[in-house]
Length: 311
Image (cartoon, rainbow, N blue to C red; front, side, top):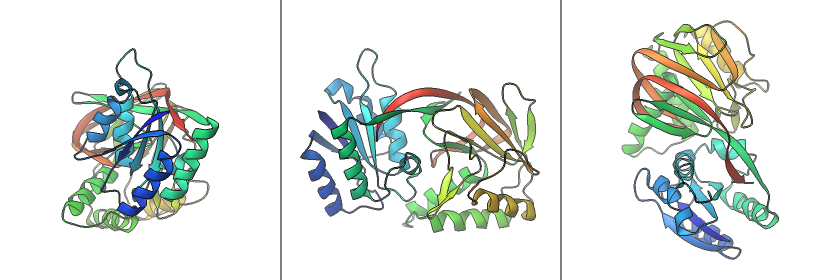
């Protein structure tokens, strides 16, 4: 087996020494070529070209942003070439996709699990989400968000450029600061989903491909607890941003059961093949924790059995 190992050297939970240990362990089992990312979307380019260069498998070490880039590259494997399988080793601050697959969060332990899966031939196929619009055609692995969460991602990216280290605490503190300022109270979003009446007046909307949406440290946050890689897309939208209603929803998100399908102050949709979210004016938008800029409308599509994962 020939494998391309895409390494993000800025991965927050690994060191050069631990990366060398991981590379050495994998190289004992497969013919391994290592490539370090040098700029945004570099991982996508490397993964897109992997099949043409004769690689059977792509392995990545990085956070959810690296995973998203690799997945988008693999889904654009040139027609006529077999798409490589994929294995993700966690190296970021949240690692939502890897955790949702049931993989260890420690990079070295995850490497051991990947090697065991490679030896046994263990794999699974997962569905993905896809966004389309005037300037978009991309896949996401676990979530896409309009409004509050995207503004948090945007602000954290700004802080990281100033030298702050990404961490669950930084995301939580940023989200709370934005909420208390009132700047995210903006009921400009409208949801359209097949089989349902349109819903307007949403302050914040989240589309998920699995659960949880994210993590507060080690605690899963579940606004859409029924969401699965094997199903269509789920949606959660907030119709109010009042303090008491938001606090109740956050408690439910952090509970073992997650947010119920029906309740006051929010709407949900389950197992949707497609849907659309529009805004009266451009709002912040993110996928898989990566800020994409402001958008006025995004169309979402479920892509079943899109990718084979080594797990």
